[in-house]
Image (cartoon, rainbow, N blue to C red; front, top):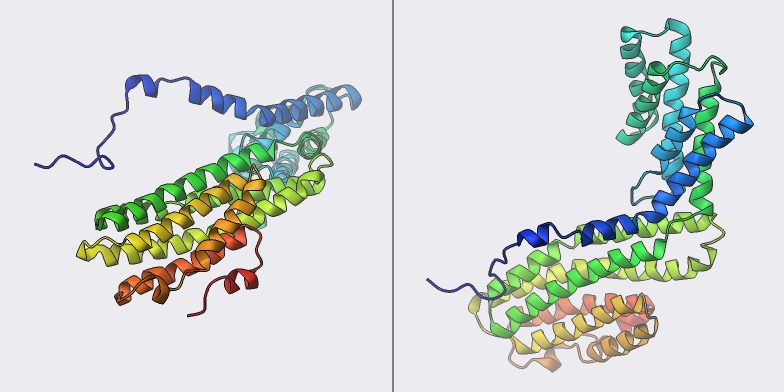
Length: 370
């Protein structure tokens, strides 16, 4: 029985690795901006409702603030506002039904049914309906303090929602750290996919190319994660006075993300063609060298997110490859499959040039016409 190759041998996960506290501590530290938002919003809303408005127990001021912010990645003001709207809907409907039919177990069932039905009418988001239902339950299950008026809880919920929106703008989470973390994960995954395909082309091993294709196909969730964190950061930057200076930087990230998304899609095309071509087991060193060069360019694009000076280095490197990316020039007596593989690398080259700030027309013009 053959020994497994180094890139396929299973690596056992040690007990010490599973019990390592460092990932947990990193997760907790990275959550501090969100924790600070929640603490300030909930405490501030509770204090305002209690000490300024004189509400004896403004529970909903705190719960609405906590629930609308949460520890989720997506801290866009619109998402926070939608969650607040759902909770206020639940409070309003519950208060109306409490006044009309009173408290009790069957009244609770009726309230939940009405709240959930109306929430689904107003929003397709399941989280909207659940948020409304939870606040409705709180209204039914926790009686008013003797000094509170019937509609004070709706006012408390509104205060909690306003507090959540204020801290979103005035105490924004660190968008750059999360953006760069998501971007690093994507570029590392793309680098691994390209390296596997390059190894397959150098050795004529279809199995390696297939693994590279699988890795390329697995990049979509990483693209979506980066897209989500960028959308969230851009939305907060539009309302936060502290993030306005980062708008140009976020616009650059958007340009890189758009081009990288297209590059990932074209990488899958390259992976499929490479795997099909390597059925004969013949190495393709020229194609491997070209793809390896483009891979280095993609890695530099990733580094340019933190060091903009790498952008020009990546641009010149990719442009040098683009100038010679003509199958007739690079290969003699090549098969149709080899030509098609090199042709498939041309759109990837355009995407990388676009990611480096080259205009679409100029990027296409950098490649020889066929």
